[in-house]
Amino acid sequence: MEVDDENEPLIDIVMVTVAPVPEDQPVGSVLTRVFVIDPEETQPHVCQVLPSLLPFSVVTTANGTKELKLTGVLDYETNSEFIVRVKCSDGEFDFVKVKQRKHGIINMNFFSTFY
Image 1 (cartoon, rainbow, N blue to C red):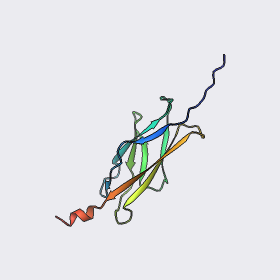
Image 2 (tube, rainbow, N blue to C red):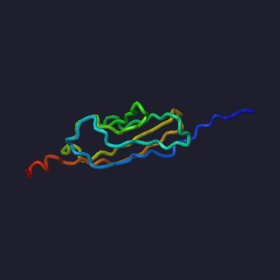
Image 3 (cartoon, helix red, strand yellow):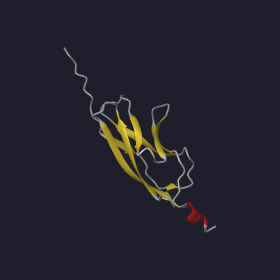
Image 4 (tube, one colour):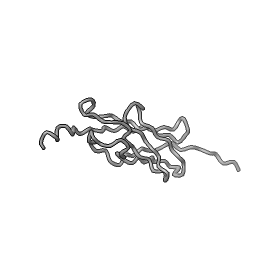
């Protein structure tokens, strides 16, 4: 009997919380967790932010959790929002999923004028 090793496509990418980010948020902060929904639950996944020039990245922790992290300084006056696309793959070229989210930036300079 022959067994076919068929790779099932990814179903979805879920970013749990997508909230506005203060422009003074420290680099390295976790903005949200990223979950890859795949029928093959034990299969590893690689995720990345597109385009790579954005000040965000997807990091996989030691326990396998994926997190969207801030990797650069934010400046409201330069960019008041970012369109972040997260691309995940299970290693098979044909099975790639992309999820897009808008991340607003909170102008902290505006709030400091009231104090």
